[in-house]
Image (cartoon, rainbow, N blue to C red; front, side, top):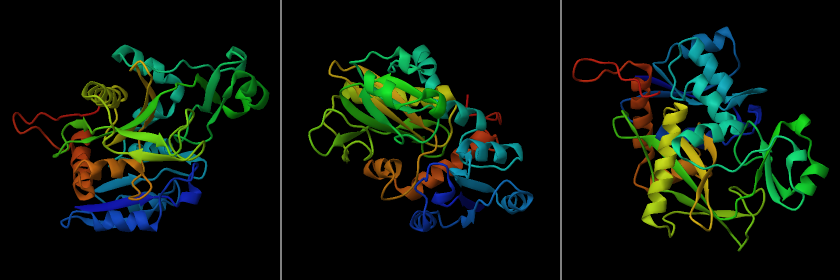
Length: 316
């Protein structure tokens, strides 16, 4: 099989994603030996790019956008021209990127979410809120402040923002990946995002306060199972393929709230969370790559059931 790792330089992506030479070299080194793998830089939506990609059996999609176009548009372009790739479908990515519809996705499957407001006029002055872009990369351009601050500093019309009450509690992230063989999906145990100092107000990443990752957190089996179950349900509900990562908050009463779904997690071995979760839980990166490649066969319909030769579509 001829495989291409498709990427765009970080500076050319809308949200400056973690894709660099070290990441690509690492992935090449972890590619199964029987796979003929190369690196291809996405240079735009043009005929030359299309012809280059047609030479490969599969595109391992690490392209998080190009200039003003996001990862959803790139995946949609590949899909439109019949280029087989490892990311989710255009429709699934479009759903996942719109944070404003997360409550509508979660409610029918019994998952809580923070309330969402679209105008600062709806906010109570003394309540603490979190604002974030309705679309785009997780953990970026986030503000936390009381309603009064939001009204005085933020404009919904200019920035397409949404507002949510800040949920005090513990934050977790759960990865969903294909099982060995690629046919189904399963969640890995949650990792906790912990503020480096004892802070009540924080988010994943370093934009509010410094945070660290705590693998194997002190967490009851029931909460851990519920977090993994919720992540799997969302992965299926949205119709995602390959891998995803969902962020949650657990409040002091043990209520679980879904915050964001990352439908195309980064693969940087040092900075990105999903590869670290996999390796901590005994899933080597070479194994993960193989699982994602196998999963793409089921999603595309090119791999059949062994009995009756029924084509299995994983995405629903």
